[in-house]
Image 1 (cartoon, rainbow, N blue to C red):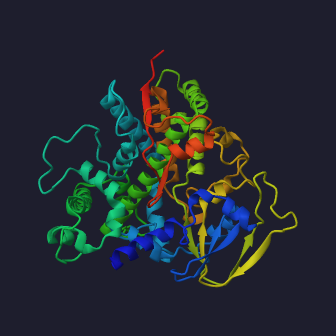
Image 2: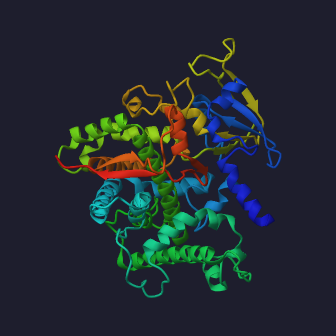
Image 3: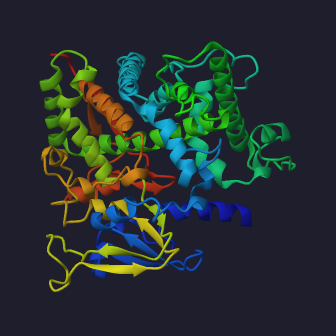
Length: 500
């Protein structure tokens, strides 16, 4: 039990304040304190005092210098399920990974994301037919799975037996791994089924008591199966060649440094492919789910977005060349990320004694809480823990007018506050897959709204007379703080639009 609690606590350090502060406080936590950096007592942490940051001026200083403010890598150790990767490294190791990984995100790969998203969406529509849509939450997984591995993902059921040497189909392993990753990180080796499965997962040979039953066993097999599939893909491509492939795994295998022998190892390829799968699925799927809920609640905004899509596309399907014109669609995705940022905390550590600028807090109208307060620089000693807090940055009235409102068009303003928008972090360690997520989301949103109208299921979520819009939104779009901010089951209805 102690081992389980220790692992859960270690993961929770990235997800939530140790003293129980909830994300619902957003910027008001800082307005009450009077400053945009606040100290939080964390007696169970190696650093009993931690500093939470809610202003882009401070964040730019911290994220702009990865040497002075590195990641505390021990907090990211659970993400090394399949090996070292771009997210779990620092220093020279990170620089090498970044250098070899970056070519995987070039323009041809971005176009590949678009093409596969459109293909998968149209197959999904065919699978839905005239029935009520189902499996909306699997859209991002299907796309990122295809883009990551270059294996065509299908919406249809798997009626044939798994391939020789496997216990489950690739798509099933992918789905279960995405659903059970928190369970996999939290539980110790002895909970993971039979000895053979644990050894395949690198979890040792402690005898299993089987006390968590079929759920853990299915997850254990899925994680082992996904690793086996990835190893087989690499072996096949090593023999058959991988030039010309546009999937992430193929690009990673083909990447070289200045010396042609400078390549990622097999374990590095697997580790990076998995982390892109995990991060891409978590960010995009949850943000799309929140966005669909926001649009269901605000029919005027949904109609404006639908009209925008029609004005760009007319009767045809979206093409890659339409990306720049579908700017309101991207704005809607951004607004979902602003209101519901995937990462609630981005941890950093000061490697040396250093100063960080601190801004006075503001009230709801954007004026300072203390009119006499001036920006200042504070000295922080070596080893200070910082947590960049996107929810507070995204609701900071200094930068966002009417921050609780759902307004996708705010991102059409050429002067929108880019430095106060940090769902992908910022600086050299910002998410390398940002453009992937933007392109995938633009295609998904455009196609879904072109063909379907989204409403709230009133039978499962009845209206309350006199309820304010924000309160209704918070009631519908409940959240849980898992590895990222996760929507709970929002009851939505997708109704097929009649063709004009």
